Image (cartoon, rainbow, N blue to C red; front, side, top):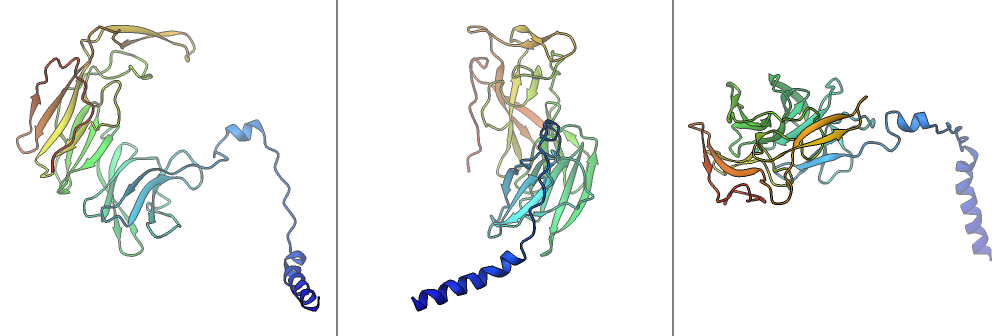
Length: 288
């Protein structure tokens, strides 16, 4: 009993300071419908697009610690738990696609309508943004050649190349044709011809660099033979009819082919497939 009494007294003595100095609970702000629907979101912004560095020591990802929809670039070490922002707070605007340089010393990313390169210099990883040619429009499928010499991306349905050592932006392919629809919405809205994915496509890429950086395999899609289909759009002030390409069972499907682009000669050679309107390219990759 004596031992239990000492233990109980010791517990109460240790707990007493936290009870004596406890702060009053702040008054709760009433939750309104306006606050729920307004920004920043109450649930925070989830990180997205995680990508390992080439040495597998660091993960880059897109995130907003203030729960804003415009995410920035962040880093976290494999052994760490505290993320750090790579870009300075003065760098505003949504960061879109990004990719690691092969040596892991820099990241190339899209912000607004421009391409940037930020170097990871020193232990403090100071952001060193370098503006690359601006005004390149909407960019997707950002990649870098295995030898680290060329940035590649899709824009307006074509493949574009930008030498990192300097030089003009090159439109590697020039075959894209704009969509016939007026409202850019829905699965069946797509360009008539493009380097891109199929209408019902999975995670397969639109293009892929060869290991020696000399050739790029591209996925070519031609929808001009697919029947036209009118679909009503109800979200505007008035109902609009949007013309799309959609084939019924038994009708012609989009043509899908593979092409090989020679980076040196800038020549694109198509790989003809039998009955290409009925051939679905599920995925493709270079052999090692």
